[in-house]
Image 1 (cartoon, rainbow, N blue to C red):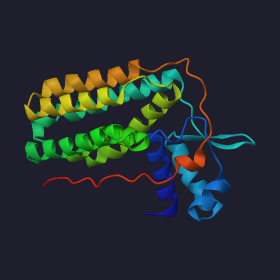
Image 2: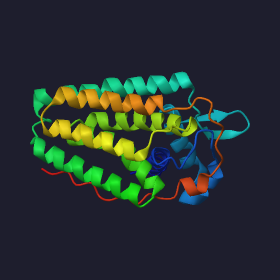
Image 3: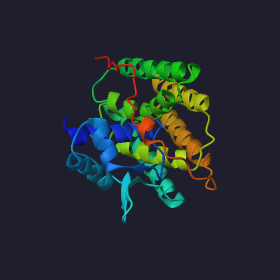
Length: 235
């Protein structure tokens, strides 16, 4: 992985973990010092992130994490509903791209156990990351690898919205809803799985508070590495 791609990945992971806030400044020199690379490489990473809609340049002020409008947030949630419902609609057609469904269920249940452990351990960053990553994990273990990056970016966009607008959606509620989705898949009730997924995404969206105040700057702490359990996809 190139240095600029690694930096870009770290920024997106920090957004998913809610360690990096909307409106937070990303100093080129600070990032260069943190990663031991040139400002040119940092600028290339930030340009990648700009193309993906995560950062913006403010004249004479530098790079900042975007602050999505309410309309942009709604659009991202809508895109997630279309994509994730589509992924679940394809399950009964291709049996998770040839994978045994029980293998998929085991992977997803392990992920949910990790979510529960992070919630019980009060590890806020890992908890936020894993709750968001469940959706990417679902796409991956269903065999939709080309959609994983798209879904990760969409999930990061809705995470920015949840951070900015201080979503009141409870972590335990999200974890329970993930478990309900997996239970429907295990019962091979794919229509119910889609229904529960759409309700889950809708619940997260409805918990946004558009009147939430601005959030503080904490770049250095935000970009510290996240230590996660290794994902094991059963074959």
